[in-house]
Length: 268
Image 1 (cartoon, rainbow, N blue to C red):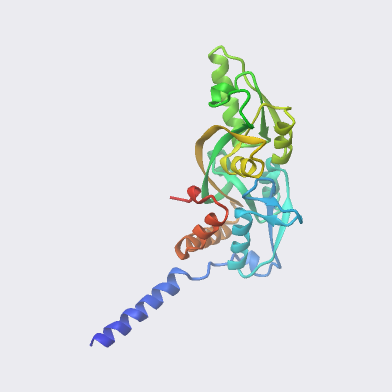
Image 2: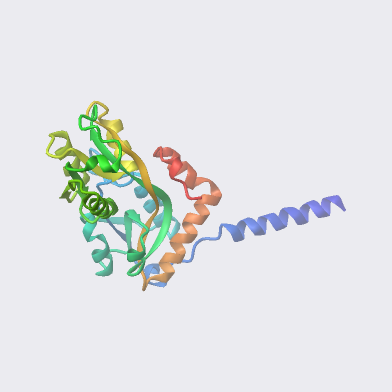
């Protein structure tokens, strides 16, 4: 009797396991496709960037490769596009998905689908020693601040400028760059006084060059971050969502965040 019950339980667990981790349904249009094409700015370490050999690396890169693997072992082609051009490129069908640090905002949701994979926050980086004494957003008044074109923090700092002006304080001068590399170079040679970016990128550069940079304004404006997919591609959205759910269940998701030292950004 006990043996029979044990066998029944084992069989039930086996069926549950197969059901819980069933392979995601590959979209019909991708069944015969020879590859997946991803659009990315490739300039937001430690999430998406190139290594010394010009090979894509980062948490989001690894995630994109794992998704391609679970969708039928598809090879991946990367199409590098400035951040502000990612959504237009996706809509123009230049790629299947945006694989980058794409913040989940209502205005983006109006034109594309977003499948979330982590949280992120904003930060402000300053030169080592913080010579301008920038510790809060109000302290940016009257200073030159680098921002990435099309970034969320540019919108936030535009709003902060409105508040500064209403309070009778000088607005900051936002200097727009197309890449993180250019913005950090401007900060390094003192063309700007600070750089507004994501917590992940700020931490990466502060760790890479601790004698040059440090955090000025601590993390603020926490937001969901995801992958971008066209609204006319709902099968792909569903498949990617299942892959991420499966990864959270089998432990590979947390392993990935731990690998890139961003486990605090895990989905709730």
